[in-house]
Image 1 (cartoon, rainbow, N blue to C red):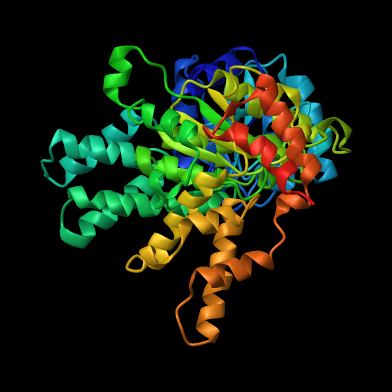
Image 2: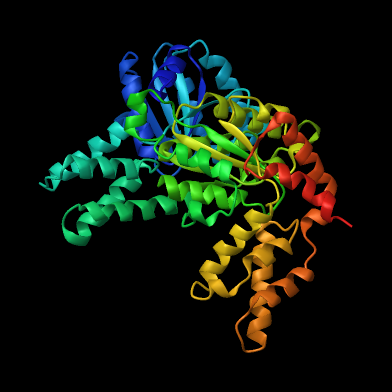
Length: 505
C-alpha cells in the first residue's frame, strides 16, 4: 500500500492522531494537502512553534509559541467541519503532561468528527502513554518516476537537452536520496559548469554517501576486494560467479527472480567479511554495512522506526548489497532480553522483510555462533543459501599465502616456499595467515632486510590459532554443517573436519 492510499484510508476511517516521521517536511505536506483535497476538499491548517498557524488569514499567527493553544483551536471549530491539522516538530512537546492529556481528550472527541491531527517530525519520539493513540505512517523516499520528473523539470528550466541514457543513470544514482538533496546536488552540478554532465553521477554518489552516514545506521563501504582475493572457497565462489548477471534486465526477461541473499557461518577470520566485499565489487553494486546494534534506541517505537528506515534506505538504493556482520550477536537470546520485547519486534520486522522482499537488495549476513541464532533465521526462504566457511585446507592455505604475498612482494613471490608455508600452518585461518605475514615483515624490517619464508614460519610458531582455543565451537559447527544444515563453501571442506583432531595436542 502506497503512502497516498494508506493516508487517505486513515482519513476516511477517522484516525484522530497520525504521526509521520520524515526529513522531507515540504514534500510530505504537499502529499497530505493533495490527499486532503481528494477526500472532500478538506482544509489543511499548518502550525509550527515559531509562526503559529499559517495559510488561513483568520488564524494567521494564532497559537504562536503555544502548543497547548494550537490544540485548543480544534475545539473552537464546528464539530462537523472537516479539516487536517499539521503540527510541525510537535514530538518535542509530547512529554508535557498538559499536552499529553489534551491529546488523549481530543482523541476521544475526534473519533466522531472528520478532523485529523498529523504530527510531522524528523524522527519517531512517542512517549509510552501515547503509543496506543498515535498511528505511525511511513513516508517513503522519492520513487524513480518522481526523480525522473524532477530531473526533467530542472533540465527544462535550464534549457538543456540530455540523452535518455544519462537521465536513466542519474535517476538510478539518485535513488535513496531525499528530493531536497537531489535538487541540491543537481544545482551544485549546474553551478559548477553551467550544465548537467554524465560525470555528475559522481557528485550524486558522494551525496549518497553523506546521506547514508547521517542515518547513523548504515555505512557506505567502498568495495575494492575482488573474487580473486579470496583463497579457496571454490564452491562459494562458483555459486557467486553463476549469479553475476542476475540483477540485469536480461535476467528479468528470462524470468529469474532477484537473488535474495547468503548466510555465511563459520569461525572468525575465515573470509566471511572479505566475501561480502568481493561480491559487491564483482557485481558492481554499492555495499551497505548494517551495524544491527545501531537499530536499538531508548524511546518507545524508535528501534522499530530505525529498522523501517534501514529497510527503506536499502530498498531505495537497490540494487545493492546489504552486509550484516556477526548477526548472531545482535539477536542472541531475544526471548530472555529485558527490553519489553523491543528486540523481538525488531527481529520480527527484519525476518519478515527477508522473507517477503521483492526489491533487489542482496543480504549477506555472517554468523560465528550458529547456536545463538533464532531458528526462524535459518528457515528456507530467508536466504538463497547457507554456506559453512570452515578452516582452510592445505591447498587453500597455499592459495591464501599466494594472494597476500603477490600483493606484498609481487616481484619476489617465487622466493617464498608456499608449499612449506601451507604445510606448517595447520588450523590457521585466513586472518591469522595475514597476521603472521605482518609479524614476519616486522622481523625482517627490524634487521634491515627483506622478510623470508623462515621469518613467516617463526611468526607462525609464536601464534596460537583460534582453532586450538575454540575446538568445541568449531567441532559443533562442523558437525552441524555435515548434518546437511549448510552447504560447504570449500570443495575441501570434508578434509577440514579432521584437521583439528590431527593437529590438536
